[in-house]
Length: 366
Image (cartoon, rainbow, N blue to C red; front, side):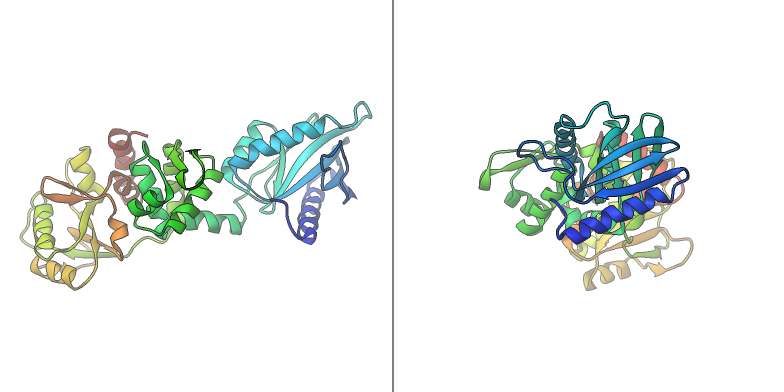
């Protein structure tokens, strides 16, 4: 989608020219705002910049967009290749098509670099491979993009991602996915639209019967893992349960919660050990619990007391049943889903990250 109104587009291009001028041995002049090339009925570029880098001259033909995701890259490359047929030849200057955008996702940048497509975004990232000149500046995504991506991996949107990853071999319609994820159809549709922009989905059918399938579960899980540091961790309560051996504590916890009809799911190392043993001993049991009066009563029955050190039980506060999605009862104990266990391990301490990679390989498989 083209930037609108044109003033925003001009501001973005002007920032790009200023960024070029700040580089050593680089001079840039903005020559045209109007389309520089018109070929038949095709629209021309948005601006032209004359660039000199260490004595080499280039003409940059700029295409401005608001946001660019992997799905958009194919269209950009096709558009640039079509436009290149009308570029002047043999006039002593190299003509380069260049993408300027308010934000370009990391995945889209990687694809653009692999195709050697010149780009710049408002965060200050720049890639310009040209004969006799090579400019590459990689900076964090602009705050607007970072915020929108972070929102995709938190709250109810994360429940949709969870459903897609747990059932990554299945095809889903919006309504069915919403039911699985315990969210509204509007939320499910919004998440699917975002994932399509990252080119992680395939679709079939049209209209109400349209279905999607997650074809890149590993890429989605990798992206979620990278976002964990920027997402606020849930509240953790630490307790010491007296007179209980480490190997019998999980069943005591499960029995107490079951007796009070409390929704819970053991996670972290204690759960991972049951699926894919890795550690010789797990001293602390971490459990996701739907907090309420019943949970407090169950914890009271255990004789648990708050501690700052030496905890053998950690309660991760869940505020809605959606945070306990896809839990499974194994050997009389509710365990969190493998996806949730993996993400929780990545937030842990000690050898938990090492265990996370072992668990992902042995239990998740992608």
